[in-house]
Length: 511
Figure 1 (cartoon, rainbow, N blue to C red):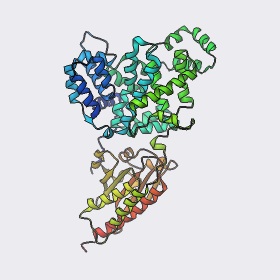
Figure 2 (tube, rainbow, N blue to C red):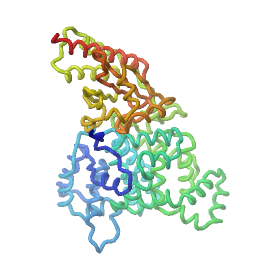
Figure 3 (cartoon, rainbow, N blue to C red):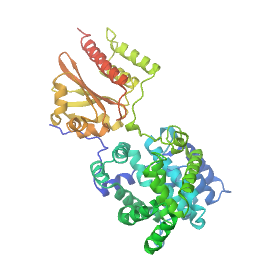
Figure 4 (cartoon, rainbow, N blue to C red):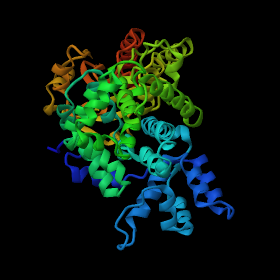
């Protein structure tokens, strides 16, 4: 008996395996940024600083140039390039031009949302760093600017290849408060900070990037001590506590900390501008700069607005948007949001698809034609991720027949029924099961890992369909992993009934 076919997105579980996969991932560059950079390189009047400034609109392009420069650094030069201008100088414009030509490109709206969102956070962090620290540490402005932009770079290929893992990590760790070590071991097999540091070192990213990850892992005790001092609202007591510990004061004042502070602020502001999480970073920055907390808060809002003017993208959430919301508002990620009810047009399309499924005699030329209409009906009623699995004659295996909102590699998925008690129950007779946070742990454990990986989240609908008294198909669908719209749940059940009728009509047409 053949074993279960696992889609190629099976997750690595070791640092070496993750580095190998993420290092081989080619990040797409937006077409408009690619064209602007090529034009700038070809213009003999442009300085390296001018070209670097044009390049910063595409974080993926910046990372590619930095990696290339540090990969081929001459053995006599031990230190990696700390900023983009140095990297351009080391490579030379001819090699830079050749590299840019080789990079994959795509229209901005076709680049996966998770990657665009994470790169926008990096751009926001760079803006915060430049506005907060670069003017005070003018000699180091390039190190601050580029280090802040590249700090989250190890996560960019992860956002491209495994966005569902990052989404589940955010839901469970940030919003539900589950222990990060447990969640990360389960999702990645390794600690996420350790993976980021290992990949940053492998790419030889600027030293301040790797120092930031080292601080978060190896110097947490010092970070906690400084946080306790930063929480003290009395500036005199703060200064006295720092004076009493000169080593801690020197550690706090290191310029490399600006990169971590800016990224901590940018990440925290993605959730809310109020609350303990962002206040913790604002208090740290206030202590670092020796200014009142109110000044840091005002400056961070100003820099967020500046970032939104430069970096905001359609469909990508920027925290500056929340500055216009009620002050206690917070951003709820996709997996936590109640799905919206389909609009009138979408429900009209859904009714048309269902009417076609119920037509007699059957208008469909083959089974793929028929199930394609069912897939379209499910999309029209609000389902975001859809899988239609067809059973073989012996009900030993389920094979993918239609899919939507799921990686294309899953089209080759084959699932042995014997490995799942839940699938065995669904194939015994027509039935529908709705997974919720209350029963998710109980029932998801009964699903094969390959199917669980495709439907991250705690909300899922499963339905088995019969034809001539025998179950022939299983439907799986959700609305992105978050809570369902009840209208969509009802439409899902009705669509399944229409599909069951259509299968009967189609199979009996010759008779």
